[in-house]
Image 1 (cartoon, rainbow, N blue to C red):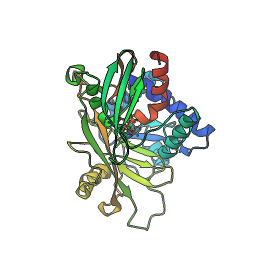
Image 2: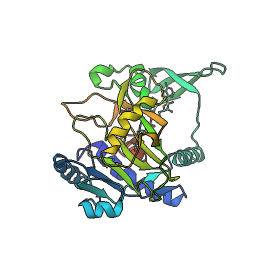
Image 3: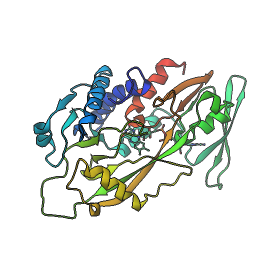
Image 4: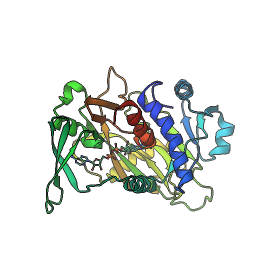
Length: 322
Ligand SMILES: Cc1cc2nc3c(=O)[nH]c(=O)nc-3n(C[C@H](O)[C@H](O)[C@H](O)COP(=O)(O)OP(=O)(O)OC[C@H]3O[C@@H](n4cnc5c(N)ncnc54)[C@H](O)[C@@H]3O)c2cc1C
């Protein structure tokens, strides 16, 4: 619902969400349609919620509703907000189980995996690409793979792989930056209340100019509550969670969940987004592009990349001659 109508992010997120729900239901993968509210705590944020609702509806997101204080209290008694945008169909999945499912399915379909193998070079030879790999542990042999189709989905390194194939990543607009996002887990230190902190997902209204959706409150499939992710640029890949960031987390969360105390937060996990530069002041879209015959680049596959994953695969199958 956040993404520009007509963009790949919008289209593939909506399509991928339905495909994921179907896969999860069919293959016994844990998912919970918890519902989500995006809350406004200030009058000025109201217009933005209306805008998000309009975008969502244009993108085919069903069931969006602006709700007032009574309905907010009914859904989320601990949340303090003047108005909210409610999405009943949003939920969470067990991402590790879905990865295991894709892995098993791919193996059944004859895919060969070469774990611990780092692509270090790519050369075009006649109709084929030669991919040079080295063993990351430096104990095994190096590997050469020949293929007439290459799908570059290397996440944080997708720009480097594109450069290996001879693309000028600056003029193509493929250069990626790292944007880190940390999570803190919640455990209530004051045991006097028995009511769960939240029943579904609670997001703040995104702040204009921010590169992420804002620190939200989520429940994982195991029922644990987390806050995150924040968003700040880093130069190196380092997944440590900086404990001092809990002060800023607490300040953000307390705006809509005033009962949360600083002591309730513990460093949890982090991730790094492959971020493209803004284009004409706008958030960048996914890039899915065949740059040379049979060489398809997937660049800037940040959120909602996981939700979109099965739809991205389908998009490649239908748009390119693979
Ligand atoms: C904090 C955070 C929160 C997020 N929240 C959501 C969310 O709520 N919903 C959602 O849909 N998405 C979310 N995402 C985005 C989602 O996680 C990503 O879009 C998705 O994981 C991208 O998948 P990928 O396969 O493109 O890349 P990756 O998962 O990064 O996989 C790339 C793979 O390529 C390998 N690789 C890289 N370089 C080389 C090389 N030279 N040789 C060989 N292999 C290489 C890597 O080892 C890795 O295995 C979030 C991301 C972050 C960081």
